[in-house]
Every structure is written in C-alpha cells, then in structure tokens.
Amino acid sequence: MKARRDRAAGFTLIEVMFAMAILGVSLMGLLSLQHQGLQSVIRSQDMTQAAMLAQTVITQAEFDRFPVIGRTSGNFESLFPGKYRNYRWQRIVSASGMFPDVRKVTVFVYYGPKLGRSFSLTEFLHSPMPPEAQNQP
Figure (cartoon, rainbow, N blue to C red):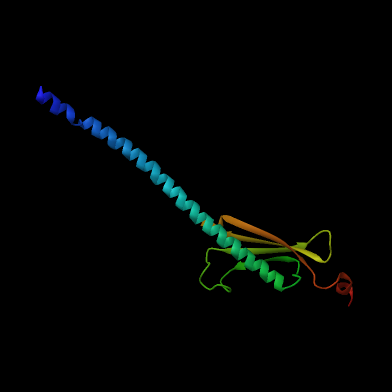
C-alpha cells in the first residue's frame, strides 16, 4: 500500500508537459501585450513630437504676420541640426474664403516609416493692417 501512495504523490511527464504548454501560451500572450504597449508609447511619442514641430512651423508663420499665399515645404535641419531627420513639413497658406484680411495656414508634418504618418495643424491668421490700408499704393 505504501508504494502505491508514493507513486500517486508525484506528477507524470504528461502532466508536466501540459502545465508547461499552458505556461508557454500564457507567457506569449503577456509578451504580445507588452510589445503592443511599447509600440503604443512609441507612436504617442512620435505624434507628440510631430505636434510640437507643427506648432513650430505655425509660430514661424505668425512671425511673418500675414504670410504669402502658397505652398512651402522643408525639413527641420536648419532649426534643429541633426535632431529630427525623419520629420518633414509642408505649409499651405490660402485665403480664408470669407475675409480678405484672414489667411488659413495649414501645416502637415510627415513622419514615421517612409514618412507614412502625418499630423496636421490649421490656424487662421489675421492681417495686422486694416484692409483699406492694404489696397492703397
């Protein structure tokens, strides 16, 4: 009777292998969640950086006071040498459509793998000069 009880107290090889398989599947699920969490943090950091850089381009348009209608583009090398190599910007200035002394400024910042992601920011700028003074020679 004693020999039978000792054999029953241990685990069989199949039970150990089954427990290891369950543990392996569980750990793979947790590892996948960790990877997704890290990717989400990286995407958030990139988007936040793109938003800050877009605001930088908008601020430059504000310094121009009333930017010329048209499209310009570039990178951030002149402002931040060697820092944001994977970011490009494009600024589109257009008439507001309703008011002649208001310009619509839209900035796109492209980033990510092959510049496949983008962030856009739009602002309306008012001319510091009254419309009557702009039309006089």
